[in-house]
Length: 186
DNA sequence: GGTATGATTGACT
DNA sequence: GTCAATCATACCA
Image (cartoon, rainbow, N blue to C red; front, side):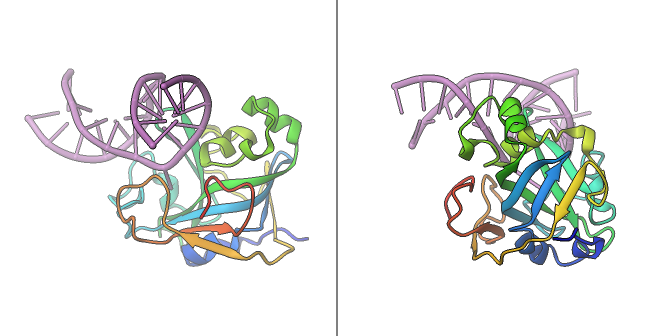
């Protein structure tokens, strides 16, 4: 197993979204295998970056390989990986993880023990891993983050993104086909 | 200053 | 399946 290099993120957002499936993500040693992602690009009406740079989405316009975290619906944090060349303002939303390490810590944070409810969904994932606005803008190449290149070669499912009202026709959702830890079936 | 909206979730029928 | 919670953000006046 080896760490993901910084060049991994400086590619087309669709490729990164697909290649992140099967990657192990740990935050302070807590996490598991990414099983579901979504891509958001600059020329994408569903993306936060579509209308240009603001205070909230500034991290999206920075260097790739950093994490963009925002508060959704006033309650839930959502985490994204910045992709493409500097300023491209494209990101991959992390939607679900198969819990592997630090299960007890995740159960404490989530208040549930059912394995499939720990990290299946962007808000749940952030709560389980302890991600909030505090980590917004941090580089994934440094602690508390660890991203290990995937060992297996998963069968990838694709489909329309969840919870959006614009550009709904784009099939920019990626997942590990058949995983029990998806936020929803494909 | 006012208001509509939202990359969600959990509770409930 | 439906729906409320809860508030930062974006946009308009």
